[in-house]
Image (cartoon, helix red, strand yellow):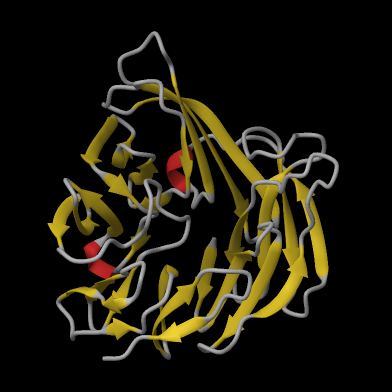
Length: 292
């Protein structure tokens, strides 16, 4: 899980998934905080992060809520010295899910319905430091098929973009949803192109841009059947788009100069003022500059 703000990159990971790192201007990741895990249950709570110019917020299950982000949640605030400076439990639910930049969604099919899901969104209000949530039913426009999905949503205008596990990229609006079928990663906003997400469709990799599929044949942007929680696409040059290849090598590029990463194993692609960087996997993550 990665969050970018200006020249800074926050990363949540490690072999137990409970370490929070911070990197500045394309430099080395430095350990910011050990967030902890449940030694008794031998599990790490499900978490999401949001980086702002002043702090890094961590969304996690609330006290007594269990390890998953499917109920009561709280937000923890860390300064850039690694000190925890605030901890806020969720307050009242948000009335309208189409006005919040959420960090997590859970979509559970309603089995007696053709296309309705119960959906819960959770996030952090960076101004108040409080966790917030919304839950309710939505008509996705796709057959439920009994698949529970969760991931990182993206709000652009009046559309929530949800990567649905093994289903595709769902554009959810107030009047229903539209699915781009395939395997989809987390979406990010890239300028006028709107929501952009990496994916694999009919065995070919590519990018969804505002719901339209653009194939970019080549090595896959991620390995396995489920994409990581971090972005696999990034702004490239003046309005272009770059697509990660999980094992490095030449990036997929739309409207930009050719670029490549050294061979390796990568789980994210980020665009900083200092350039384009891949993020390596493992317990000692690194930012690796792409070569134009």
